[in-house]
Length: 436
Image (cartoon, rainbow, N blue to C red; front, side, top):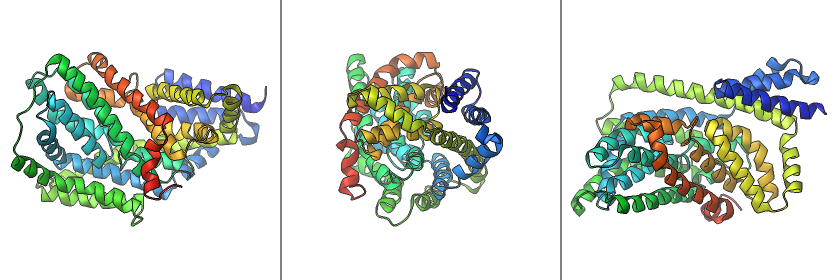
């Protein structure tokens, strides 16, 4: 048995063993990478090598966008943007049967897109709408399930930190601008698929609807929300037009969010201390995950794991459709026990060469891997979004699973469509001249 094969076995067993023992993902990645390097004589100073790779892995200008977007999301969460978006969505679509569920979905899509954070969307929208939905007769577990699934759309609709991380992990084969503009159609499709499930549920259960509002009220709510929605135009439009980079756009988003908070009179100077502390804590966690994941990604490259896997899959599975199905199943399983950031950084270098050999564009694969992992954050045992959404709704996780399953089924159907219909991911980037 070659040293490369032994290294792969040691890496896999140590990593899975540490996760099973309850070690946090970032530590499990770093420890298993170090253990694997220790058995390789050529790289005996394992701790030095891992430290160097962790440091160089986050020494990237594009990653500066992440702390800025995290900070912008915290400011928006504090600045009353969620309430304005909810009021607008309620006026727009609340008069349909099950109207508040649709309001939840649209509000989560809008807030998630503006803040770039699924957790922020689930917290802000869920905490505002859940009690209202409960008073109108909506089961709490159903409200939580809708909030959890809808909040994932903000990870596809730009600006999205996960898409920035994928651009880094792809080694430059997919630009941030192309990924951002490509995320609109998949994100909207996921939202529409969830709405379709809500429609059937609302008809079956006879859910209530809100009173139809006047055009004057609709225009008033739209006017209150327009400044929040303008942020999307500034950030994404500026990046796509080449006016500024993703990092510069993130900094602009922070300034805009601060100004908007003061204009709306819902942000005070005393709010900045808790906002900065939460942002710093979140940034530290994300950056540590990225640094250890980059060290493991380097190890994959050193051991030629992507090339070996590409050759094995293409030789053993002749049907390209089955290869893509296998990759989807693998990523769905991975998403159940691993957070999105390390999963993107670890599995992008492994599977990207495989799908590119099959003719899939890196931008399309970006949409596929992110949607796979969006489903993962809604499922146990890790399921960060599942636990946040359940906590906000004050309902046990076990009760949320049943109403959540049809919504996850709808998301999986969209995933399969995106996998086998490339133009859904590539049409917009091509139209804007961002890809060939």
